Image (cartoon, rainbow, N blue to C red; front, side, top):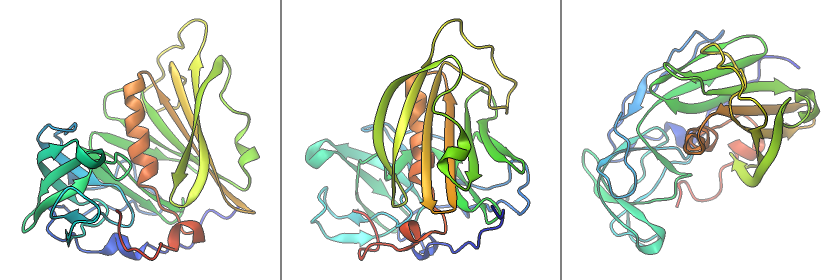
Amino acid sequence: MPRRWTYAVVAAILLTGCGATSAPTGVATNPVEQGSGSAVGSASPSPLGTPGVRTVLSPLGLNIHNAPSVSATILGTPAQGAALTVVDHTDQNGGWYKVQGQTVTGWITGDPALTAPGQFLQYQSSDRGFNALYPQDWTFGASTTDVIFHPLNGPQTIVERNGAQTTDFGGAGGIGFVGSGQQTVVVCGVTANLNQFTHTGPAPATPTPGTAGPLALLAQIRLRLDATHAIALDFNYSRAADLDVFGAFYNSMTFPFPQCMHAPAATATP
């Protein structure tokens, strides 16, 4: 498979964040340099009800309403990567955050697929053919076969690989792993399964930082983009709570294929 895929950035990503506080996002060069990128968001996490900052994950941007309801008036539409300061919350209508930007204060849905707490960096590479956000205290390393995202301090890894078919990535799980769960996810218009695995027997040895060695838990997504392009995402982690990091990554992911690039009639969600 050719390494270079022509990259067309989603128009909505380039929208100026209306009333949002955001820093310019970094761009990984081609070939990708180790850990390049610029921060967007804030280092402070913000669980529902706790002040902090949330970063927009949705490639189509996210509407800010004047009340905690999807039918309320839209005040602004910050783009993907915009940082919004959380000042209040409510559990009504499924949960909403009251957020403050430079010029707009209003409400955004609490759906964790659309925003995430904390500060993020942007990875973008036409060689690899995808965009994604990853936590500001992580970095990455790239080779001809994969890109490995990992914390500056910690053994977790998100591994991205390209292939012609999903079968190019081998069987599900790995040696010493058994299936522990499955859920359906949508990654920029592509529906796939997120399969979870648990390591059995003796605990695997702690891998060298930045390498995709096994940990206690494993999550995998296989994306079929067309007849000759596929993407594999493997998340090696140790605690169930860490799965939120993987969720923020794949919920922010974009790639230059029709399922992802052809946005719905609405310009933002929800």
